Amino acid sequence: MTDRLSAADLIDLVLDEGSWTSWDVPPRRTGISPEYAAELAAAEARSGVDESVLSGEGLMRGRRVAVVVCEFGFLAGSIGRDAADRLVAAVERATAEGLPLLAAPTSGGTRMQEGTPAFVQMVRISGAVAAHKAAGLPYLVYLRNPTTGGVMASWGSLGQVTVAEPGALTGFLGPRVYEALYGRAFPDGVQTAENLYAHGIIDAVVPPEQIADILDRALRILLAPRTGIAPVAESVTLPVPDVDAWDVVTRSRNPQRPGVRRLLRYAASDVVPLNGTGEGESDPGLLIALARFGDAPCVFLGQDRRGQTPEHPMGPEALREARRGMRLASELGLPLVTVIDTQGAALSVEAEEGGLAGEIARCLSDLVTLDAPTLCLMLGEGNGGGALALLPADRLVAAQHAWLSPLPPEGASAIVHRDTDHAPEMARAQLVRAIDLHERGIVDRIVAEQPDAADEPEEFCRRMGRVLEFELAALLSTGPGPLAERTARYL
Image (cartoon, rainbow, N blue to C red; front, side, top):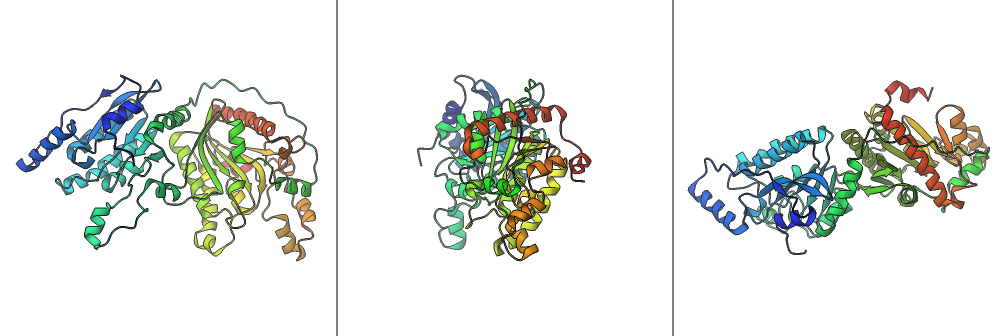
């Protein structure tokens, strides 16, 4: 750990020079004992601030933002009634003024000197943050060392994007309390920012000097205009040859074929990777990010061919991660882009016990009813229910050599012919190709490969990016389609 920054130091580091304006009013300090009043006065003298929370506004890279930040030097950043009043007032003002809110907690949690009346302030604070997010406004969190207790269990864990300081102690029950209650030390390495990242609870571990960069990139996407985007020129539609279905399947399996990571690298104008469900799960088979294609912002969910292996196929955790992205799109009023490129979901005891079938069902249900515009890209392999889970959308785009099937052709052959030798025949018979789905009105447009995406990865990704930019700009102008239209294409 580096030396702990004060609240003022962090404000100076993140905000544009001279732009900070405090929103704070003096705390009321009513109904407290003389002993507690003396403790508060001593804390103020030591820390140079009058409470454990500072609130206000400033400019970050020229953009107006609201800020709430803890001062650990004031009674370990603990939250009493006056601190909670300040927090709630700041969140409500940010909401009323339509400002993105940046939160930087560091705290031992509820102020023990005030007991239960302080403890229940978690309800008010969480309610204010929920209302801010319900207004479609960004709420971004930077967890500092330490963040525990009632702060971690309320406003510290509600960010749409949450990052943490390297080595920060982050968790619910402070280790000193655990040891006092249970007579043994809490295991090392659990309550750390790095471990939270490994378990999909936070999105990144970022040193303080990089915070302004990541927040600025996130806000460029989250605050990008939803209306008034200049019309994007329709890209030239290249001819798509009638390639044999088995050839399509084998081409899609080429290890050199570009996946979602190269698509974002070559085609997106901004990308902020996210991580996991935020609830203790992550899966390398799914990539979740905030992104822009041209000027059009989106929440991006892509099945990552690089992260799926025979030893670790895509599991139910990936679909729960996808559902986090769906919730974010709804919450932020952003279009959702889903990308299908999977060898198939896991077939295992763990997947069954993890509720894989139910997660497929919930993804389908969430997508057909989502109150945000949706765009699905069939990029490569499309095996089984794990692929279908990301299919429903207002618009469907497919790469020329993408396909969709209830099982891999080898599996279909095993069922029908009791061997895998008839896989090519089954691929043709089952109409798995993007071109077959286009003829039936399921796919709206096909993006050509010349002759194959593996032969021209950069140009293919840029060509696909131009199509995504066009489609997203159109969706932003029309909005989400009704359920009946989203399902009618499958008749």
